[in-house]
Length: 361
Image (tube, rainbow, N blue to C red; front, side):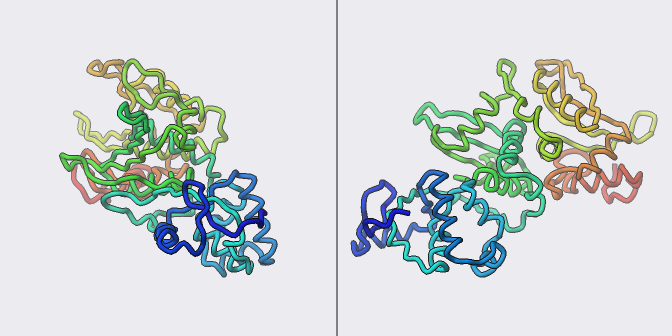
């Protein structure tokens, strides 16, 4: 590492003397938003050298610092930028003074405007199932279903939005984006009519998350004259497809129990999608993991297609074996079981015990 001039640099890259009083205080006040601004290989080298100097195993070091062990490996592998405060932790444990290094930092505002969700309550074990780069594709699925990604004409910035009336789904999406891209929301709040919650991310065109999402699909609009794609999932390993489809079902999917005209109960597992090309790709993805879904017709929709669905017992069992809806606490938002967890309804159907559900038809 460079051990030349003894200074930190501010976010514009200009030298800032450690003795520069007011400016120094300004930097310190925003340390929680500062991240090491070097290339991936350079960060790998810096973190690796500090770890070698510390001389502990990753488990011992994580315990000493009070970190999640997986977070350390994200920094060590250069997957995520390392925050200034975490770099200080490593330097202190290694007996190294960070002020003896010529390092550049960048300010990233991860503080959301409005209400802030407690992401510590989001179940973490599931995030060990995939690598961060694989979870990035699950984020794209969330944007294609319950989200949008548009470029503003006024300033050229991109606005990524995720919409749902279920706050559990928002908490999972925010944690998902954090795991996949190390990005926090710009805002979280309700729409003007108070019927929907919105998680938003405002980013520049050069932002890595925006660039990666656009590399997956050139558009995330599902209107009649658009061409969104799921090609980025087609060649992925099955585990990635499974987690992506579980999340898609939580966003635009449903599980329902209805009484038919003859009085017999009918069951339906459904994913809503009116875009014909996208619909065909969803169908192929479900078929590839052993869950056959049939196309639903609707003459009132521009494409004549409402989505894909199945009422077969085998489909419910297979979906339950996959883990069901993701996140596991996502709620029913329409129909007879509003407010109940979708997985609770799914389990009752699989076990043929719908009478145990507390809400009437």
